[in-house]
Every structure is written in structure tokens, then in C-alpha cells.
Image (tube, rainbow over all chains, first blue to last red; front, side, top):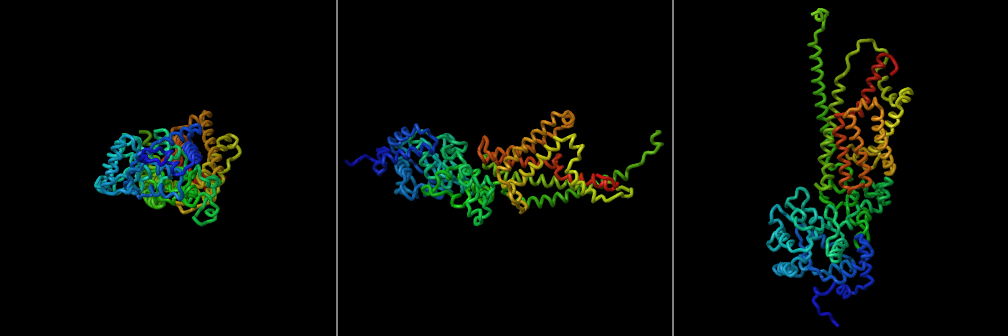
Length: 366
Length: 219
């Protein structure tokens, strides 16, 4: 019998089954999610039960100053995965790039979703918010800031997706012409789940969604508001090239013997040691590889201000400024100052010598 | 200030400031010392000042037997921590990159676990030196605030470096930033304290040797 219920009334389990996902595959996904998020295996049935019975949550996705790379990351999976199906199974009521409606109809959809799901919808934001001038970025004549604050009011949870939304990202890069800020800088009354990355890993976003659907709460976050389950380890700690770092074997250029042998990319500017993300474990493109595996150093895209980190190809231990120039100028100036001070000292000594009068016996007898 | 901003500051502005103070301080002090000169000795020279001076710079590396017997602990631990410091500073790959960035010069590095082990040995030797200082009543009497300050600023980069490498207690950007900051503190303190002996040791040894050379006696 055909199920004529509205998509929103169906549970996630029903939707997945209608997409041909077997129970075995679904449980495998639940187990993988639990393991990825460091949740006890004993809770896998609970995750499965909660996910199966979860109603499609309404999601409003706001895109501000961004490049749409985050959406591309989520939608450009090569094959259909359970993660992407879960993502498809949320009620994405508003998303510039993906929604069919445009203009007034699009805004009406957002307003309707907010009204109908007040206090229950998820707000996902990618892109930074320009505070320099409201006119720098508007949607339907509404400034990014106003739209965010209006939509955030009734949200059950807020997820900042991508480095622009989490830390300001590229628009925030020096000299930050639009006065771009992150969500955390304007939303102070609600916790924001930060899912940074340029773009973030799709499975991390679905993982956060799965956690919210399962437990109805936000996951454990680190000091930068990132889910610890995915951002708990640095790229360096999980990197398969780490043994080469320990042995002191480094690629010096992109085409030398070291590079061909897959040695550590630290000297080529790898930011893996200071970057916390799941790339080295979850990998990209359906688990194919991650940047370091492709021979390129980590850019540190899930850390704040990675655009202003002193150059992608400058090793982490190197100073970001031109110290050689500073050293030469300082040395020249110091040499001149030293000679001047030395001359003054000599003059002082000579003067003291010249004004020195010898003590005679008669002086002592006085 | 986030950890990454802190790291950005110590790699940028902080490094610039420390470099300026270090280089200016060291050069001004050395030039002043050299320009002070020595009082002309009107006596007839008994030998070469230069030869004896240069020889003394090298010969004082090896302690004479009686000195060694009297202060064997100070000498051995002193050598261990100085050689350890040299290895940690100059033979660790990320540090070589700093020198390469500034001077354009590069040299081979030691494997990381070797530098790691040397760091531990150096920290232990520095600790034992301070312990010995306070156990020996003469050394204790001679110890002043500057000695403690110099010991702390020398020890800090080693400890913070070890902690940053092993990610103990915090996340990497903050720990690396703390390590770089501790080195910058060392650089800033350097010209104003007895850390200047790194450079002046050669001048003073030369003077000592030259004085003996002029008199025609063994230095």
C-alpha cells in the first residue's frame, strides 16, 4: 500500500527504508557513528532507535558571505551514502542553493518554517556576517545580521558550518574589508556548534545531526565550540606520515626524493601539528584520501585565521615576518649606536684622565 | 585572544620585537666592551698576545686536573647541559628551519627521538645544577636573583618545547606558542644578563690569554 503521508510526518527510518536502505546497512551506519563520536557501543541500539523514530527536523540553512563550497562538499558525494541520505531526509526548508523557490516565495518558505517549527528547527549557517556595512551582503533586502538574529531566535540548535561561519574565514582575513565576524561573535545567548573546515567534512555535519537527532542535545564541544568527537585529535597525531616526522625524514620540495617516498611535509608548510580535524581518519571523497595523502601539506583550514597564518608553504616553526630584514636593519643601527656609545665612553674616560690631578704628599698632610 | 592568534603573534610581532632587542642589545654591549680597550702596557712584550689569546680560547675548553678534581660535578653537568642545549637548539629539524628562514643557511638534523632524549637529559642536568647550587654553601652564598632568572629563562624553552612536542595538558597551537614565547623571553633577557657569556666568553678568554702572552708566561 502506498504511504500517502506527507514527507515531514514520516520517520527517518521510514524514509531510509523507502530509499532502499537495509536494516543491516542502517545499523552499520549507527555503529560507525557511535565509534566516530566516541560513544559507547552499548548505546548503538539507542542511536538506531532514536534515528529510526526521529521525525524529519526542519532545517533552515542560511548562507552569508561564503563561496558555497560547504554545500558543494555535502552534496557532491560520488555515490549515495547513508550520511547523505540522512542529510536528504531532513526537511531542508530554506537553502539558497538547493531550494527550488526563489524571491518572495523563498523568503515565505523561511518564515513559514520558522512559524510552524518555532523553538524546534535547526539553524545551519555557512558564511560570515559583515558588520562593516549591512549593505555588503543582503538577501531579499535583509542584511545578513538581521536575518541571522531573526532566525536564531526560534532555533533549537545552531550549527555554524565552515570556517567562515565559525571564525570569519576568508572574508575575515586581513584587512577584513567587510568587518566580517563569526556566528559566535554575534550570537551570545545560545550555544553554537562549530563545524569548521574549508570546506568541512560531510560526515562531520551528518554526525552532528545524528547526535542531535539521537540525544536531542548538542555534542560535547571543545574550547572553540567544535565537537570533540571529530576535532579531538590533530591531523599530525593521526597522520600516516607521522613516523617520518619522528625519524626526521622530510620532503624538502614537492618533487624531490622525499616527496616521492611520502616523507613528512612539515618543511613544506604542513599545519597538521596545530590543526584539529578528522581528515586523517574519515578522509575525503568517499574515504579515498586527504590532502596530505595527495602530497600536499595541511593548510590548517579548520583553525581560526588560517588565511593569515604567515603563508601556506612556510613551516610552522618559521617566523611569519621577514626577520632577516629586521635583523640586518637592527644590526646596522646597533653597530652605529654601539660605536657612538663607545666613543662617548672613551671621551668620558679621556676627560676624567685629563682632569685628574695627582695627589701629592703635601695634599695628604693638609 | 585565541590560541591561533597567540601563535600568530609570537611568530610575527613577538618574534620581531625579541629579535630587535636581542641583536641590538648584544651588538651594543660587544661594541662597548671592545671599544673600552685596555690600558697601554709600556713594558717590553715577552711574547705574542694574539697567539696566546687564540690558544687560550681553545685550551680553556679542557679543565685542568686540579680544577676538575675540585669541581667535577659542576664541570660535567655544565658540559652536559651546554652540549644538550646546542643539540636541542641547532639540530632539531623545526629549529633549523628558523635559522634557514633568517640566514638562508641549513644543515642536517638529528632524528626527533634523539633530540627528545637529549632534551630530557638537559632538563635533568639543569635541575641538578640548581640543586647542587643550593646544597653547596659557597655557591648558595654567591647565588643572586640574576642567577635564578637566567636559570629559569634557559630552562623554560626546554620544558615548554618538551611539553609542546608531547602535547601535554593542552592543545598544540597554544603549547607551541608558549614554547616560542619562552624563547623570545630568553632572547629579550639575554643581552642584559650573564647569558652574554655566550659571546663574551671568547673575548674574556682572549684577553686572559693575551695578558699572559704579553708577559711571556703560560696562560
